[in-house]
Each structure stands twice: as C-alpha cells, then as structure tokens.
Length: 349
Image (cartoon, rainbow, N blue to C red; front, side, top):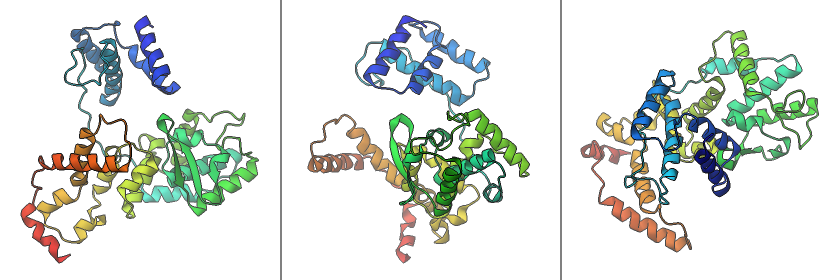
C-alpha cells in the first residue's frame, strides 16, 4: 500500500481511535484508488471501474465515502469537509429505497416452534430466538459473553458499533431457553454464549448456511440478507404492536432516527390499518404530513445544524438557552404543512 495511505490509516487509528474493523475497511476501499493524489478524471474512472465490476450502488458509495475522507485529509484542511473545500471529491450515487426483507408471521411461528434434536441444532435455535427477541446485529450476538446477561432483571448488555454499549430487555421465554442452553453446555460466565465447538467465534458464514438450510427444511425460502432480516422482522413487529419509533431507535442502537425510518416505511406498505391516524379518519391531504415524523425531525435538524460547532456545554442552562435560540432561528424558515386548511378536523379529537 502507498505510504500516504498508510499514514492516513495510522493517524485515524491513533488520533481518532477507530476500530480494527474500520482499519480493515480503509485498506479495502483505498485499494481502489489509482494513486496517492488522484485527479478528478481518475475519480470518475474509479466509479466507472467499480460499476463495470458489477458493484451495487451501496458498495460503490461505501468506497466513495472512504475515498472522500482520504482526499479531504490529503488536502491538508483541518476543518470539516464542506462546500468550501477545493480538493477533488466524488459525488455519491443515488441508492434505491427498497422494502426491507422480513420473515412473515407464519415463518416466524415455524422457526419458534421448531424442535431441535442435537447440540448444534439447539445452539442455532437459541440464536434465532435471540435475534428475533432483541433485534441485535449478528456480530453483537456472536460476541456476547454469558456474564453480560442479567437473568434476574431480563436484561443484556450488547457491544454495538463504534464501541457503544447498550442495554436491551429480553422476554421471559428467551430467558428460559438461554438458561437451559447455558446449563446443558456448561457455559461459564467468561465464555461466549454462541461459540464454536473449539470455543472460538462461531463463523458467520456457517451461521448463514445453517439458517438457510433450516428455512428450506421448514418449507420456505429464506429472505435476502437472511441474518439481518431477523433484525428487520423485530423492528417491523415492534412498530406493528404499537411501539415507539424513538424507543426502537435506542433498542436497535441507531445513532439517528433516519436510520430507523426504513422499518417504518416497510410497515406502511399494505399495513395502513395499524396507524392511529388512519383509524381516526383524518382527511387524506393532512395524512400525508401527519403520518411521518418530518414535522418533529425538521426542527431537530435545525437545532443540530446551529449547534454543531458547540463542543463545551457548561451546564443545562446553557443548553436550554442555545436550544431556544436555535429553535427561534429555525422557526423563521418553517413552511405551512400540507393540508393546513384541514387542521380544523383535529378539533373533534
């Protein structure tokens, strides 16, 4: 690898404390760049080359994000990358917004009621129950230790992305299945819950293979992105049963509400009867505005933009003062919502 690439990775590793997985991601993405200081024409050819290699839009944008970060660093600018930067950059491709793949209720019932016979089948069954009950990522489940399970309070501590821990509740049924599994396999507190027969990490490819074989055995084809579909299924079912999208954001470990929105969008496809706004009979033109969280997110985004440079919050009074000031400035750019003339219809509620 080129010396400048190595220096960039070394600084990110030591100054910003990125994870080993991020370092590996940098190495993979930077290998696409033709040189240490590519011109704008080289960057266009880079995108064409990736498309010719049949990379999808999401894969191309992943490389583009890394390349833009390196090009900004290589330009020597100390400020955050923005319109004022003169270094070469690549525009990201427009990604298609697809409905999240999920398991149907009948498929979930088959997975839950499946009766494993052997030791390794029971391990797979407990893992599936764990993914459906908590909505965690497969990497978080694989790295979970027995000591991070609070059987008394029905809580688990997950190590999420970017070294962010979060506490997630579990059901009573999952506690029984996991307690029985730990007792049968003699799992000690310091041991991993889902480990291979040698005690090492359970390989993700092996889990994917076993999950697909199980789905085929139960009489249905596994959805695309099978292991992550358990997470999507948890999110959609959580919202379908009246859960808050803000609580869902915390449970899933998403840093912004925008990351949780696809789950709500998937729920809305063909499931309009689950929304309170539909049951109340709000006029259709007003539904388009009130059926989303845009009204809430818009002022939040305005506050976030106007306070992004504040790094030293001294106390709560300062935070309230800045928030009030940012909201007043954001208010000047508010527009009338769609269907504002029909707001009178809400008076009867």
